[in-house]
Length: 225
Length: 330
Image (cartoon, rainbow over all chains, first blue to last red; front, side, top):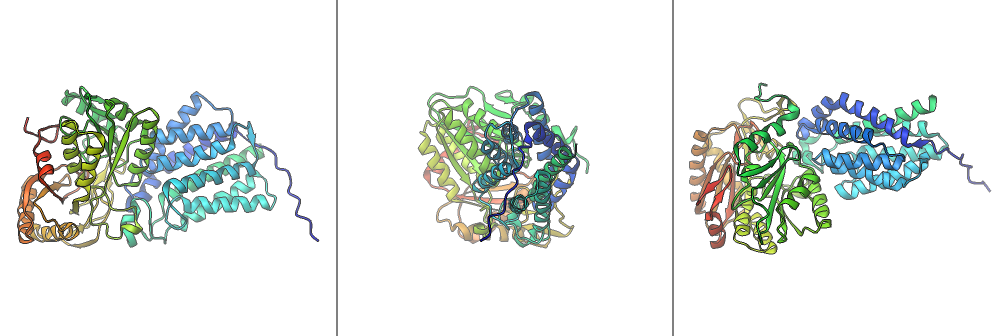
């Protein structure tokens, strides 16, 4: 009889400081990529995803800088609230709900493990899907987030640490975003194009991949320092 | 692309500063982006709040005033406003008789207004919502986010606004708004793409010599592209689309709407063709409005909206209205 594989106990290495640094990195990445996101949004949306995300993340970074929450859950809830209050469009409520739900699931622990973050993200993605009504292959941010969660889970099950598991998640998100290209949009403004939405990468899936990549990069820097 | 702006980031607040300077009978909160009819809330009257992306002017700020909206929330260009704006607007116009949110069917508008309704209700404001989804060009609405809200928004705001001005209670004002949406249909055409300030150029590619049939108010493509047609041929397609969908059996209110860059000379010529096709279809026109009311920045083109009227809707249409963009009877 085989014993269940022993799971190594992962350290609670994701704290408020790490998520504040993620926010800094994410804001820089969104600023740098805003023009590309807007470019992706112009054939199938209305050419504003980059500028909307930039506005939201700049506001979130300012707000969190003024009143830094001291728990990882607190950081995510605060960022989510800022995005709802400043982004508008569909991205504001959707990203806002994703981050708020994730943050709420983390509770008020001063630090969490990668497995706890994964469970929190799962709750966040569920909240997002419920609000937006999207399922995989609708050509939305869900197409980046769901494979990312799966890859995150698989990496943790294989015993990988936080940075490695998040890197796997970010890579899956990026692949998921690229894989939206041949899909026909069924949600959001792109859905009105019908077949003409085919051949364009979804801007929401792309920004989701950027945010997860920023998280993986932050975690790698933390683990190597 | 040359634009009469300072920088793209401040286009909306810059316009609101102008709006505040010009329309002194409205209260314009430039920073928080809420436009309120001065004197609101009005005792016993239902408040009407609408909003959506900027770039569709005069929708919605231009329709705030007597007999129409009580408040409007302009979002960024082509981006829905945020819940904070709507909650603030609701609080500013609620006399205790409740507030009607008039929401165009776009994912962002729906999500933000839903969140706002929940928050406003937490603060003790009774909120009803009407979703405007009149665009017949969206044919497979089961597989999309549903039909878009376009020109019928003007009819919903005017007719429900007149009812609110008469002191009708919230359920009645909401019922009229729902009725107007049910009996209104629109179809739009684009002759050129529009340019958003943040992109600094056209948001889609529409070659010279082609037009887009069934376009949305953000330039979302519609049913098909064809070689450029005459005004009369376009009227045939647009009117057929709305009449086949609605099949009106009473005189209609008609909106011949410009998308922003089509001159009135062309719009009136188009209105003549629309009247011709409606007459051929045995549809009587009770009232017609021609002009740029639900625009798409600098897009050239037009849309046709019909609303099947009954005696009460006609009376509400003729009721006095005094807003920056629509004014009669007072």
